Image (cartoon, rainbow, N blue to C red; front, side, top):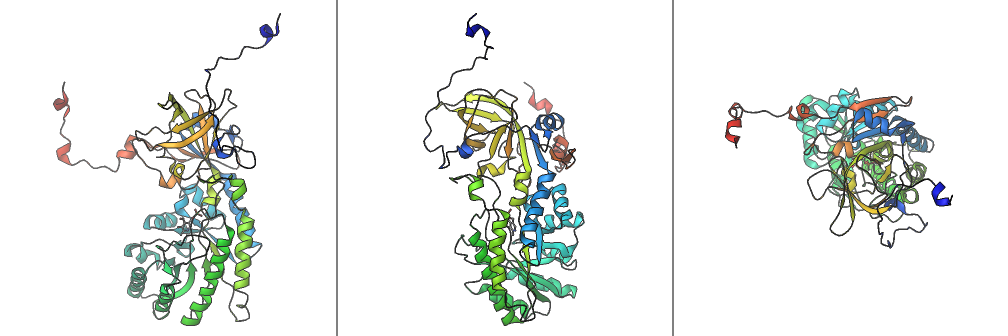
Length: 470
Ligand SMILES: Cc1ncc(COP(=O)(O)O)c(C=O)c1O
């Protein structure tokens, strides 16, 4: 018998031509995010296929273990370098009840930016004093609730300053507040639409205005210099500039600042579009962020103890870097197609309605098993009837049958807050617990849950089927 007769038969595969890709490799000889590396069959030991069988496709999956590990590592990095640190969980990054509960169990305050988020934090049991209230619009009705509850209001603009003052006056209380600052760090673009600018004098004017009010007391300074900041020097500059402003504001107004809130913005281990290098090369560790910030802060606040003033509490509102890599989206292939230009297209059951961050990141996309076949440059489309619904423009993937699962990660930040109920139902969300148990965190939507908010005026309820006869 010849070798050919004894060898196991390989399934036939359609031949494909793959053009040579210029620039596919980075300087480490890796394909980076344009290429899938391995399969991913489990989250914390639990089979993704089983989760999809039990909860449907697509489905978001969170890892409790990863979330807790992340927040503990972040806290350790800062607490081991600076005497007073407080974390504030950024609700807008992910306000799933279970995610927030884990953050609060681990000692995080809530950082909220709207009436809804404030109410959600309070309903979850977060006391007012543990809520940092940011954002450019805080309606009077929620200030009337939040001020007596002791929430820390981070004032964004002069109109808001007057509003907070008038609410405090009407309630007969003195509100302890913070102001949001913006300034040029020299490393980031200035987000001057939020808060008071230091360089043009607005910020000091706001501090003075608060200093003269019998109803307000300036207790804190806040800033959020941007998102996905990979240069730790930007944070060192932020800490130094805020500490300098603190000294000047105290001198000019007689107030004593108790906290400096440096906001969020640490990069997650995600692959920002346009980034040449992979995340493990460009994203600093928590220790690197902590070293830069605390070194600058310790240096800038060195003289305080001698002046009889404690060093300010360092507040961090880290969002994406804590939750992004704890989240996965498992989806399924629903169709294959060949585009007019010869490219291969694959349609998935999850689109940009669920994966808003596909506009910014090249997520990892992995099958749940080792797939045979020659990888081909592929565009991944979502199921929306919209041209922009592309979850990945270009990725090397082997042939995929209808029904084959593909897992996107990291997707834990911003997707479950910015997702859209557009032409379909948003899917279930589950969490794999530390003990391996899988719990539902959110039910999949259905016709009733989507229609529930609608009201049909009486005149539209008359039967119309007769008008639709052929
Ligand atoms: C005021 C404030 N704090 C914290 C965050 C969280 O940022 P990130 O998720 O980038 O850490 C944001 C996000 O935009 C923010 O605006």
